[in-house]
Length: 354
Image (tube, rainbow, N blue to C red; front, top):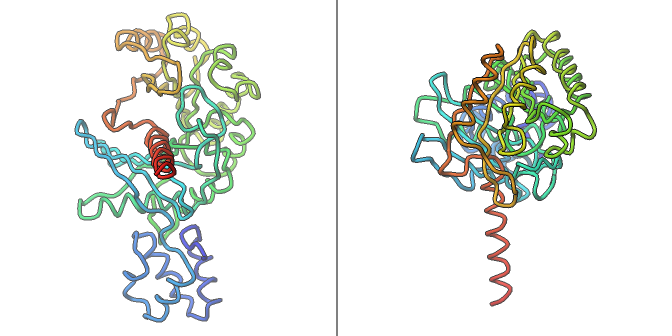
């Protein structure tokens, strides 16, 4: 089956011509796909073409398998099912500025960060550009009739975006296609744990996305305790790649910093982080650590969060405490997928015993 969702309008037009249809049908199909439509809903296409499409192609490579809505703030967590049966997660969040969707870029992750649930089973495979776009299209379909669509996208779900570089770049370019969903790349944030060569490559793409770096430590010694990638690229190398990104794009870099008790959340670490970032066009997003059952890391008290935050601000570092959303639905990436996998394994074992 040919996946149409990952094609540009020009590519889809060429594909339609190869099937023996006029070029303008390609633009029609492209527009329908980006409106989250299935083939049966593409009513301005001849029925014979619609039937042929159903037999040979895929318009929506992702579907929502489960959804959980927070009773606290209305955040919705999706468990997306892919055509091969694999699952990834997405989180839909409403803000004053619009609707933001956190999407996944890989099934699982191989980065091995100690505080993350997504990496526990490793990386299964990369998502295609069409599957990433499909996460947004599913969310827009969920929102249909509510008068809103996804306006902001965060590549911060399961997976390391820069470990799936080519597919992610194609996805970003699809977002700004003239006849597609036309989402401004200034409303897109891409989070990386620090794959330095790909950070330099991204800076050359002329794609004005916000680069977010999962830093989580003010020095290499602490970073190596929780993030295996720290053995490959040092914090000084990451900082230089960030400065290059700022020079090339004119956009500030966001540093994600998950506070873990006894690891990186003390007064000394706050002062060291301030010194590291002083003078850089950046912002620090402080994150109270989400507890992962299989991990031994602990969060911090709100008092400690505010103390850490005040030290940064007193040292003229732009910083905020990230608003916690979806706490009652396990909003952190990887948790719902892992629970579903464990549940399925339990059911399989139960079936085997019958």
